[in-house]
Image (tube, rainbow, N blue to C red):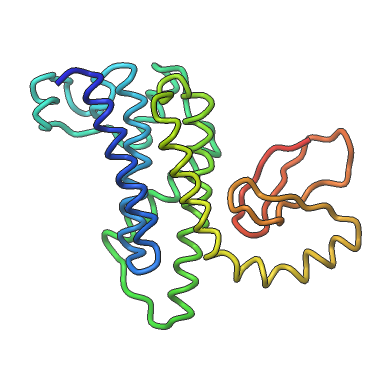
Length: 231
C-alpha cells in the first residue's frame, strides 16, 4: 500500500464516521460523540499523512515503516498533531479551531468512561442539544479547513464535503428549542437597534453584531456560542 492509498483510506474512514455520527444523534448520542471525534482526528491525521507518513506516529514512538503499514504503532494525539501541523507542515490549527476540536475530544472521553443514560426526556433533549452545538461548531471549523487552507490536499473530495455539509445542517433542528426560547430576547433587542445575522455554524439568525462602524469585534451566536472576528 502506497502513501496515496493510505491517505485515501484515512479520508474515506473519516467520512464514514461522520455520516455514522449524524445518523446516531437521535437514538445513540453516545456513539455519535465517539464517531464524530474519530472523524475529526482522521481528517487532521490525513493532512499530516499528506506531508509524510511518519508525522501520524506519536512523538513517543520511533517511526518504523513496517510497523506503520501493519498498524502496530501509537498515533499522535490531537495536541501532538496540532503541534506538527504548525511546526512542520506550517499549516497549523488556530486557537478557535483547536478549542472546538478539543471540546469534542473531551466529550468523547466522558462518553467512553463515564456516560450514563439520561434520567428524563427533558434531560435527554438537553444532552443532545449540547452535543449538536459542539459538533456543528467543530464541523464549521473543519469544513473551512477542508475547503480553504487544506483545499489542495482534499480537492478530490469536494462533492463528498458538500454532501456532508448538507447533512450536518439538518442537525440544527435539535437547537430549534433553544432558538425559540431566545426569540423574545432577540426581538426585544432588535427594537433597540441591535443587529443579528444568520450564524454560519448553526444557521439561526442569532449572531449578535456590533452597532459600531469600522470596528473589529467578536460576533457571538446566542444559540451555539460560535465567536467570530467581524468588522
